[in-house]
Image 1 (cartoon, rainbow, N blue to C red):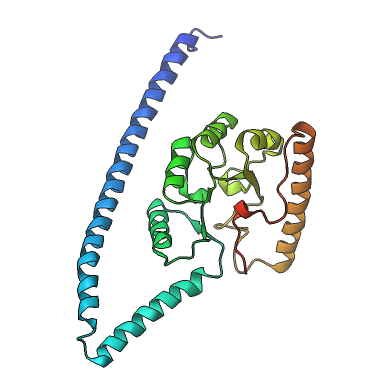
Image 2 (cartoon, one colour):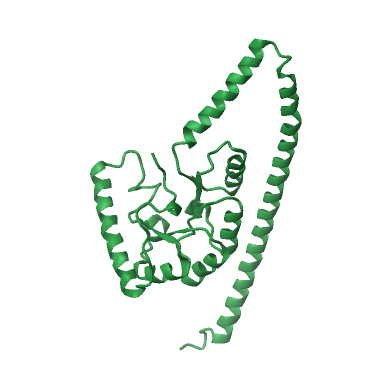
Length: 263
């Protein structure tokens, strides 16, 4: 070892200083997030105030309107509501990647604009990686969520302690997201995260870049091959879980909390 090499105490001091820097950055980012959340809430409250004032006036004056004008308003309102239902009614689940949108959709659901049985799934693209994030999503109306893929087992366990939502866990993920293969973590994931569902998405990329899996021009042969590979991987994962955590119970076909689109 050279005399110029850092000592353990120097290395420890360096890591402590970097940790402090990271904590400071996180605190600043969290302060910005809180400010944006507050601003969004104030804006929505303002709009609700405007609508709460204007809509009753419109309803009160509807009977006094010329018949053609009143019928036009009624037709437009009906068309807008039907357009929304045409999109949402056939689905059991909607993928959401933004907390503001999640809040808005849940408010629409409470108001009856969205069917009560629709479940909102929060995507990995939302970037949540903590128990606090899981708790926040649950409070905003999420029905299930997909944490980021590179969390350690203790981090995943903390998320389970922080929320009751079913977790969608990437156990095999495309290279564009880091290329994770966590088959051997599968048994422990089941033990600390249940209820959970494994997501298997191998390949160069999911949605962007060369070789992306989910593009309209992806060939049928390639998709059929990928489906067979996923079934094979699922069998391997199932065997690993059975061997190392036999107390685990595999969900039946089509469980209610899986929340997938339905015809």
